[in-house]
Image 1 (cartoon, helix red, strand yellow):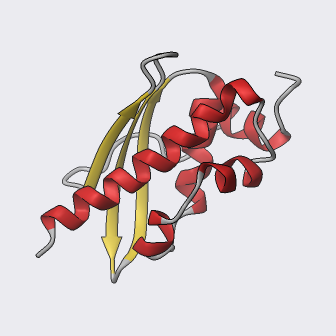
Image 2: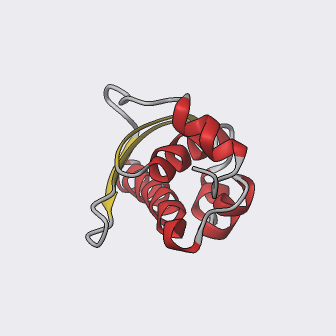
Length: 124
């Protein structure tokens, strides 16, 4: 894993927030049909902010690492901040990803935006 930053390696070896929130406020599952990576994200929202994020990822080490890292990164953010999260911001914050692994940051951003969209669809 020499091509990966220390942050990627740390979050792969010691993932945070793995699992699922029971009765989440929002949830989404995204996958990449080319590589087979799959991310499921559940969120809890409080006062318009992300209070908790849990994830279940099946995929390569960078997919697991970006799930873990992003779940910590967005805690406390407003829903609007999460909705504007880009793959570039995730990849930069985690210390970079090789070109063939950028899809991992895409999945993490898409899954979180999907969970927010699901939350909004449930909330009057």
